[in-house]
Length: 88
Image 1 (tube, helix red, strand yellow):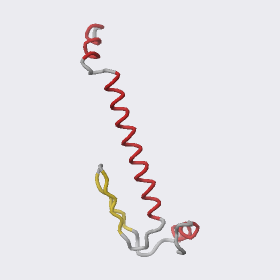
Image 2 (tube, one colour):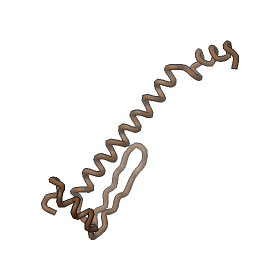
Image 3 (cartoon, one colour):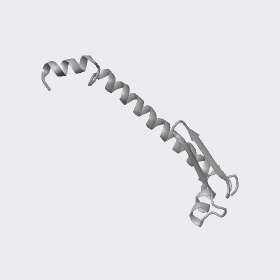
Image 4 (cartoon, rainbow, N blue to C red):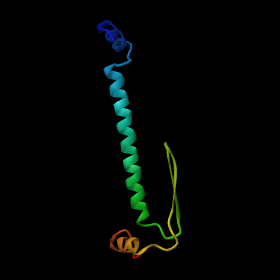
């Protein structure tokens, strides 16, 4: 691409700084939302009872998390240490 073509494409916003910054901001926001969604999902998993179904609906779609009827020993030990476990 020639220098004149590059200047023209920057002026049209094809490779412009503002377009780059807008895309970067949108992607950062999307990642932050996904991190918070994952963090809240983990917090909820510690307190929902066995056999429950968690429906997590967000702008990117829906997740269904099904807790087993009986927890394995590792999960039970983790839940017993958690202060939010409500005596499980």
